[in-house]
Length: 339
Image (cartoon, rainbow, N blue to C red; front, side):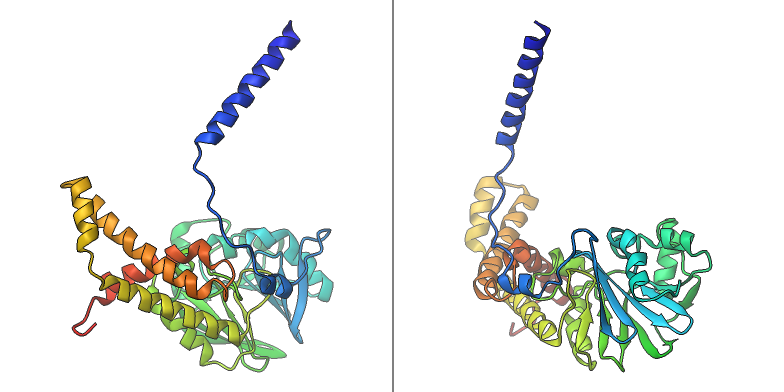
């Protein structure tokens, strides 16, 4: 009897679960990851969970397929750039694969948890660790009081050059992504550039132009990157670095999104407004939402038609990129006479 009651209970639970799932909205359809992205990806050994490769002598990149970290083997020890939490258990084994030198320094690219949230553990394992960041990032982290993101003990203002003998790296602050600042790390001799959360090679960037808090600077960053003589770009995401060609392509895409949003903004919205007022009456927010949704939808449709075959998974965040461009144009730039 007890067994039958258990079976009945399980059956009821399964019925309830199926009913609950049936009430969930259907998942949208998206294009699969492109063959190009898959062919360029560095293969990850599932037994290890990461891959480490030498980009140029003494400079290495480690990735788990989702996040990337850079490290340099110097005459005084290993200098690490970023410590993503997802890579935490892999960073030190990756370093140990190429050198017996200890980690002596950690450079923060910016303050976001997903790229430096493993720093607290690195510091515990290396108590004399030197942590380097630009002043604005250091101030931001001091306010956060997050043990996973220790406050830097060495700072610089706007720009500096680190001697990582046998090489050097130029550090310069930018503002294309986070409010506190983003680090552009350039190795001129090796033609390697690290600029986290700028692009994803051959694949769509994350929503809202990579969650930028400054669309003006994000649009400009491509020109800043291309002004430097680099061959390899470490972007912080995916399993392989990017190239100059990837940056050029993404610059063209972002400019196209902006120009499309700008043109869509100028289109006549009287019909949409009329329909929205008829339905929502005096609900001004609902009317404004209807207008914005129609503009974003038109922008998304155009962008997907031009870019879906060129940049993998463009359809996943096309609407989000259009919204970011639309807000930037309408509220920051503003229409000009002749636009």
